[in-house]
Image 1 (tube, rainbow, N blue to C red):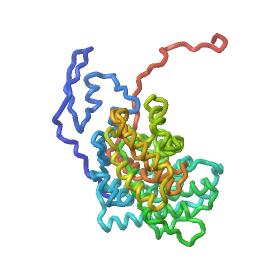
Image 2 (image 1 turned 30 degrees about the horizontal axis):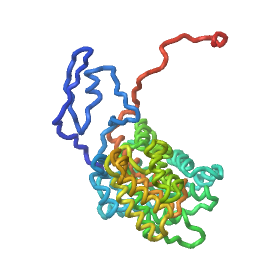
Image 3 (image 1 turned 90 degrees about the vertical axis):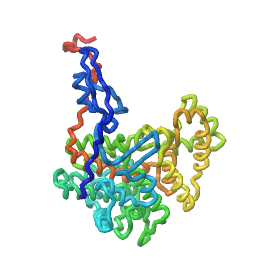
Image 4 (image 1 turned 120 degrees about the vertical axis):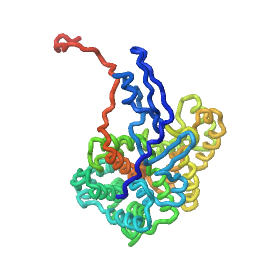
Length: 434
């Protein structure tokens, strides 16, 4: 694999001064890359920990993968603006960029695509003895989490993390097999037979074939829909230190293999607070029911009785650059599929909210999830598959972070706590307890 470029720690031009009022000791601490080192702080105030639930103001690592400026609405992969990648690149090329640090040349791109294409098959036992062992109504995301972890038992060399060639092989396998596992989980959940990968098709075309093929000799996906899905995967490919990526890094820091680490990241994504936002948007739009009901709904949001799904973001405080891209993608998709009946409600809701001082003052703007669910639904994906699609797109980013933390020899994750429990007390026999 190509070695990612070394990180530029930047020139130290700023500092803060910290004084421990208990001892009077003062120390100047340098600011590097917008942060200060906790170990420098602890030299001044030993034994004092930062209390930061949810890591709202804590940087747990240095990373050269994704740059995100929430105030300016900027998202870049390895320095390349997301707008350019979504317009000009492909998901497979972006996966290469994230994991190698540079865009591939023609020879590298052809070899990378060949590797991905010919690792799409899964072991027959994974399908026959594992996936088919789930209950008939199992959620596809639960099946996916379990299947990814199970791959660890099939590729035992994955535990060898200090061999670049072996690690590269696991990266290729995971990116290649995620669509196969995802489609298999869907087909099982709806009682349809498994469809083998068609390696004459491209990445997203192959996935659509495994999802929707019935009896035709060869599935021919609509090129506009295949491209739309490719763009959605690009937009989801990485997003800095989110919950799923943090889970990946925490497990990776223990030197768990790439499969169990990816399973952990996927499990984090399974949570409705992380990966389920676009599903929540659709349910909300359906609940609103019609354009006439929007003003009354807006008032319930202002009164704090409900939440406006798909608006606002933990990081973006101006606008989500992915939302602008995805809105155009939605237009392209609806020309093929017909307009989603919920689209008019979504457009009117967005129009009203963006003119209302309540939402403007709180910097609540549409995020990527506001339109992605409408696109997925128009393409025929059931709600249960939305987060699965998210996981396919995010896998290259997770793996890039996994390789980065290994290269940095990241310490095993072990945060501290502020203890708020009982003081020491003696054991009370059962007969004496009230």
